[in-house]
Image (tube, rainbow, N blue to C red; front, side, top):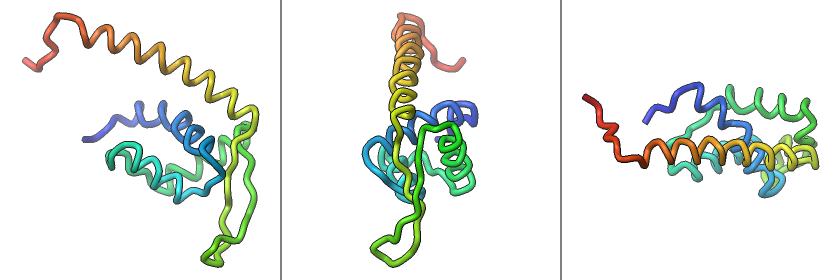
Amino acid sequence: MNLSKDLMAASSTPIVLGVIAEGETYGYEIVKRVEQLSGGILTWTDGMMYPLLHRLEKQGYLVARWRLADSGRKRKYYAITDLGKQAILEQRQQWQVINNALNTLWNNPYDFQPA
């Protein structure tokens, strides 16, 4: 399934904030968690992930620090801030409004099968 770029762009911030809210993590782990959450449908690239992480950090939603991983490699780990937690709450409310509207439309008696 190919998801539209618009839908991917709109959903990336709440998804990434939600994943990081689970606990401090780094880019590759976020990509793998998103893939797991979507049943393998969402396969994000570094080119999509790191600009988003940098933007969220600049907005004050995340803090980052370099840490030595168990493998001995230096990795940049991200943690959510209080401002990021507030953003998740706001985005959750917004997505619930959208989800409710779509469910209402899609569960009506009209048949949406292609002609």
